[in-house]
Length: 303
Length: 151
Image (cartoon, rainbow over all chains, first blue to last red; front, top):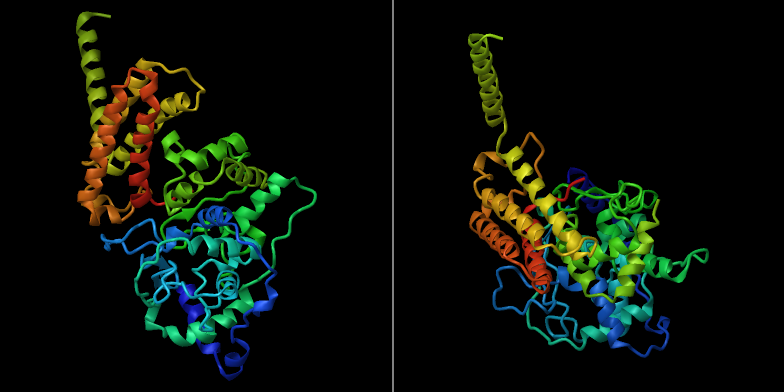
């Protein structure tokens, strides 16, 4: 926490005249998108795998809200302060109804808003950036089928009263230079299709690394310790390592882990509920069995 | 051994047992007690999970005893989270939110106990999986909000 605050102060301080220019968001142009016929079913699948709703839930005390819709406002405690993930229903005024395809892709894959601001990296674009354009556009097509909800967004509360505006406009651009790698997912040709599907789901949409990979000094996922566990991002205990699950006797095999992801504590798998994992497991239970098995196959083969 | 010596040694033995027993009671705090109760629940859940995963055959006697064990142990939870047991030692994975939401916490414990009793009452295999879903779901509902991830 202290380190994070220090890093944020350094970020703010480093936002000098030079920084102001180089830290400007650099979105992709619309013509960088290949023509795409959206697949709404695939969009729903990826929306679920990405856990969009789990963060973009309505606020807890908003009892009138439909909790199956991502109208935002749910409190998220992060090392960078208290955030209120925004409304991503297709409401044109308060949601993302008016967004173009390229605006959505820039938001999800590069963390850049249509207004040219950097999103705070609690929005896991550091992982989503590894998704294919096609999958991201399918998610948009699925979101466009949801009921629009009018719900205004709430500004984040950063620690020490740090100003939101300059950080989102530029400060985070400096962070991105140090910590953000927008590289497409690279399949490993030496592994089979199931393993590669699992690797893609875990690395990209599933954004498992955001919690299960420890962070380095600039608060980027430390890929040399990929999925090796570490302090919980909300500061409550530790996130378990996903390496050596087999050797450590956590799960017997990929089928066992796939069953755990499907049923969680319903079948007595008591590691599937704490620290936010309950919502993840609920999402996993809604995926096709082949995706759960792919995820489990990839994870069980991490040394 | 004459009878007097036998009486003395018996008395001594009883005395030692009493001391040992009171020592156990005196040294175990609510954190140890609830962790032991959780372990008992976990062990019984393991028996039920084996049936659910078809690693063991459905056995109404096992289901009853496991359900009873879970209900008895969950029943004790509400008394095992006093105000002064937020922090260890020993290390505890209980989240501070428990003490800010005691009514909800107790309600969830009651729901879990009821689900365990319903499980204990299952005699037909057809009713087992729904009971298992409700029971496991009640564990999840509480752990989701009130337990820190460990490891």
